[in-house]
Image 1: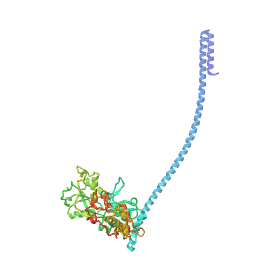
Image 2: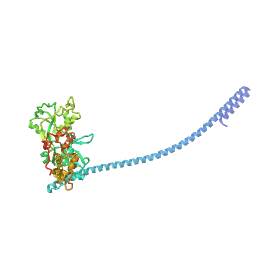
Image 3: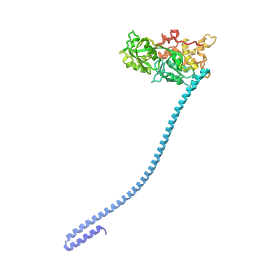
Image 4: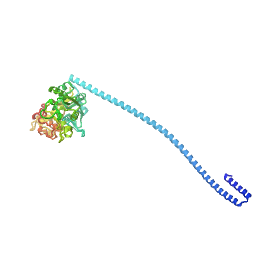
Length: 497
């Protein structure tokens, strides 16, 4: 008997007892009704207990399922931990491999640097031996042969002087008379002047080191031919491609351009001058000769000199007159005259070039000593361009002179025939110049006048009408030393025969 039935029986017995004692039927009925209600409540409680039992069983089943899931998840976690450990080990192994490869790379880079240094040393030793051989038996490896083995011409040039050697950083285009010379030289030896020339920046302080070290094949960089350079340096000068002179670009607010200039006007002032240039020595000698005291401010290049001039750090700058004219031209062209600009336009009226020439500056190409066959090619390439202009041969008409070499013909011309169809024995036994080498030069850059016009003027010169026919020149050739001898200048070539 469950607890609810026992309670009900007890209540009934109590009811009977009370009824028997009191005989109160009403009370008995009330107790019976109450007992009946209690019985219903008990049944409801039993039903609720049964439902709760079912829920407990269901929850117990869910708990069991969750326990199974937890076990499975724990097994998966354990498996993942094992995989993670394996991946970490793999990652560590890969990192070790990367470190090993990096170490190998560094070792290879060190070996590469050592090999490059060894090759440079061997080149120097080989070149020195070649020089020694040349002095003993007249034989040496010509730079011309090395160029053909390499397939490119290494030309040491400027990049900052408009008209001589200039690089436009926006377009990558090089221009100037020195650049035209490099291109002509490439064409003369059978290379492509557009693709086979490697231009190497040569500063005033390192240019001869680049040449003697074999970093460049030829130096064509506004280099003055002097006796000490010719005798003391590992340098052999070739043709003079520009006759220049040292000048002085002066700030008008420091020394007015009043038409009565004298060296004494610069007494006590500062002058910017390029380091490693002949201008340094010339300036010191000029000051001593004229009894003036100046402060020489050394600069690495003309750009630095211009900046120092414009900001007042220097009262003047000195250098080749062609460079000074080019600097003033560029400042006016791009409107950057700054404090020396005219109030009504962009002209640098506050800068002026003194009429005095401090020195002669014959600018020539340079090769290494004891390399005569190569030096001859460098020289005669320039002489060929000059001779072509003297004979009226240019880029537009050289092909029309085919009959000049027809012996006995009405158009036979010995000089033109020799120019266009003779090698003159130039070159080396391994790499002689072709008989048509000057045709290649004319096709590439034209004659001397055309190259000059392309560099300093508007590029429209016809190649034959003379300096006065050149237009748009910021540095005219007419009336200067660079005009042909026939025009009163001193630019001419040895006899072409």
